[in-house]
Amino acid sequence: MYFIFIFSPLVLIASIKAWLSGYTAARFFMMASMSTLVGAFVTALTVSGFLPYTFVHFHAVEFGITADVVLLSLALADRINFLREQKEVAEKSVIEQKLRANTLLEKAKESLERIVLERTTELEKAKDKAEQLARIDALTEVSNRRYFEEVATREFTRAQRYQQPLSVVMFDIDLFKQVNDTYGHAAGDSVLKVVANVAKDAVRDIDFVARIGGEEFAILLPGVTIEQAMVTTERVRVGIANYSFDYQGQIVTFTASFGVSQLKKADQNFDALLLRVDQAMYMSKDAGRNKVSVLEG
Image 1: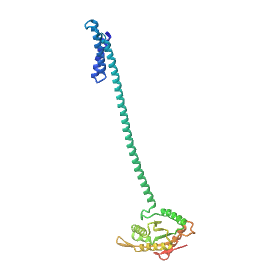
Image 2: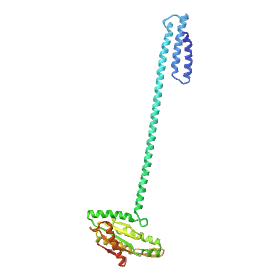
Image 3: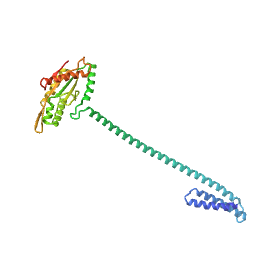
Image 4: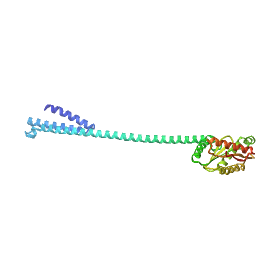
């Protein structure tokens, strides 16, 4: 009994301080201590004769202790609920952090994929441009000799496989050195550009014009017989011969000599056809230039 009178007030005081400090479960400890203390006080007064003897008065301390136990159980339940809520809050926080992390990761992934795609596209464009520059003559913007040989070999193989005609034209600008010596290299460059443009305008889209040397050009004519090739070649020759331009107050005119030949069954490779075309071109030069010569082989 004396223990109750000593311990319960201490618990009561501590519970009040804890409750005022924000610990909500302390209210149960406060009420539990009060119930035990009041019960013990009533029982002590009954035993001392200050209160009449009744069952409730005499057993008040037991009722107080029972209430104490119940209230402490409620305090424990409250504590368990508090801890559960804290756990749920913590789990919710972890989930939210994971979601935020996943969102950031997805954004980073999308950003990286976009950067990789942009970089890949840039590299592909750069590669295509480099390949194009490797195939194109920078001055005249027609194909260069390397690409001409690549396409010519492919067309030669295709023509032989499917037994289709393939004609080739080769032409060289007449007295081109004199053009450079008379008007200057800038004028010579203009002549080369003009010749390339005239040739491109005179042939079909599927035909292939290339600059294969300094002032030497070639035209691949897939599916074209030698008779048709002569008509096309004459159109190019006339177009070049009729063209003139003013360069620093001087009228620049020029011509070209042409050779034409067609693929034969006996040709073992494209070089055999190209050799005939070259020979035909020099036949035109020997005949006085500005002509079209044919060598059928």
